[in-house]
Length: 569
Image 1: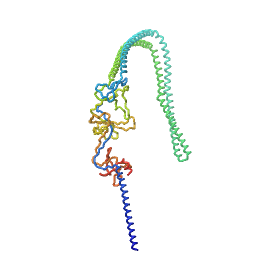
Image 2 (image 1 turned 135 degrees about the horizontal axis):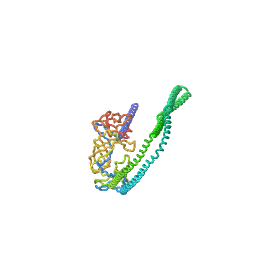
Image 3 (image 1 turned 60 degrees about the horizontal axis):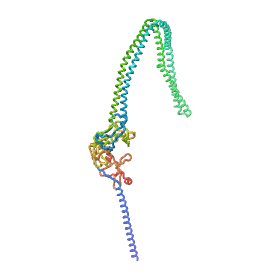
């Protein structure tokens, strides 16, 4: 019985062992399945991320820009005259029309020009009639003036006779004038001496004394202000009432200084006014008065002492009057001759000017029809005249007014092209004349075009000229020898300027590098995830960046921009 129980116990132990082993195997299978599921998910995640293997090689540094294709030469149609009477389009061909040499492209209205030419011709005729009438007027005026001078000459002869009769009466009157002149001279001389010796010195001393007093008051006010300032400095350590009193006292002292300064300056101004203006003017008046009275006295003395001589002088004066009349008659004759010459010269000048204006108008009238200089396709307007930032261009149609020398149409020479583009100011130091460029057009992806920089603007300008916040650019012209019948002016061109070639260096795409806390990093792929590595960068282009330190060839870096990779990391 005991043997049977021991066999049954052994059998149950074996069964339990088998069950435990089976359970262990099932557990391993479940764990393995979970791991495989996780690995599949990880592989799917890796497939969502983008990676790049670090290599050592060459890459180009370029500057990208966008330009516009243009013909190497454009024949511009514009009105070359003055256009003073306006230029209103009366006829214009359709845009992109084909024309032959000599065909009219634009015709301007000529009604105003025809009318102005007629008016100017009438003006020339009227000026001629006016000149003839003026000659008649000048002749009549000369005759009247000569008649008046002859009458004056008769009066001068009569005055000579009357002078001789009134000479006796003049002698008595001269004596009376002498006495009056003497008294006036003495009075004026006394007034001048009194002013120079007494009044001027007294007033000058008063002015100087006033200046000294005001200066002393100003100095006293400064001393008082300094004391108040010192008291305020001492009062800062005391109670608030004491400080307030000290501050008020200082304010009063400062106002007193200002008032004293103004009073001192007014006193000096008054002294300068007196010395520069009042005193010289007063002295001049007194001196002039004295000189006048002295002259009157001297004249009276001369008249009294030498009446005969004075009479002879007056007589000679009357003779001179008659001589002046004779000279006036001669002057009238000379003036009449000169006026005739001046009138003739003015007439010739006006006629020349009017004829010149008439010639200009006729020339403008002849240029009102703009004709095609060559066979080609007409492009209306002037795209280059548009301000940057404006999306509209002047519409040229019948009734539109244009300005002289405004380009209304272009006929391009399509045998050769150039590219006009704008280079941002930040890239100006990288480009130079002669650099090679690669040109691409989205409409012609299979066409490869190359060119060279021919010219770079000397000065920068704003991309949008009227916006002060707009970035500054340099206008650049690129020549290209590429020709293709599909090319046309105005096409947009992508410009790639080769700046430098970087050879034999480690480089990675720009999207693999990111900045954090002022340093550059990459995420390098490891066995199970990615690791953040600090790198030192060198030269860069729009696509690649040189790695100086931190990576090795064959390292695999994560390219940022994938949302899945960012979440995984």
